[in-house]
Amino acid sequence: MIYIVSGCSRSGKTMIAKRLLAAEGLTYLSLDWLVMGFTGGMPECGIHDLQMPDEIAKGIWRFVRAMLESMIFGEEDCVVEGEAILPELIAEFVDEHPDAVKVCFLGYTEISAREKFEAIKKHSTGDTDWLADKSDAYVIDHVNNMVAHSKLIESACRKHEMKYVETSHDFERAIDEAMAYLIRPAR
Image (cartoon, rainbow, N blue to C red; front, side, top):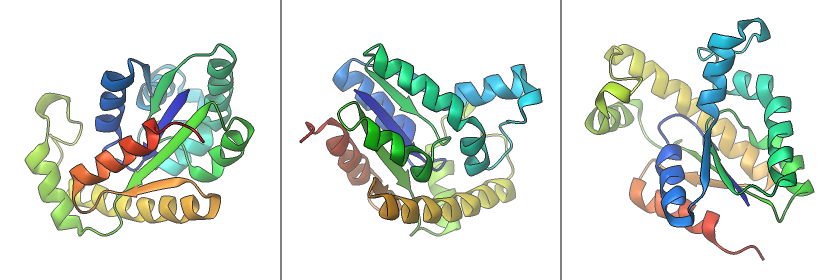
């Protein structure tokens, strides 16, 4: 099974991926690693980490799709986590492989930029946190962009009948909901 955890920045994707790794003993692939590989290793492809998530997702989708196809063919169980997947891009793939892929998107559409900013500052993980050295104005602007991105993801999930979990309120309950959905046996 390939478990895909996507959505906006700071919505809990990595937390869910780590819990899946611990619970299911799976391998892990961060789409952020791929994006940074394109950014630093293949800039001629026009994909870089400063683009908006939807631009990145559209730019690397064919690559990611081929990689996922290979993982299914090789019967690899894996958690694939990152922003660089959109519901409208992966919907057909999921329909083609319903017994091999589970997808969950996360976002936050119902929280103010100030509230999310305070949560980010409170839970910052220090040196490995890419927002730790950014100005308050930068972080708030990022949050505003991610709220807008969350709204697009939520709408696309409804349209394509994909799982979306709102993490604006009761973050831990939302993480538990996503975990329960992902590890629930297929019907």
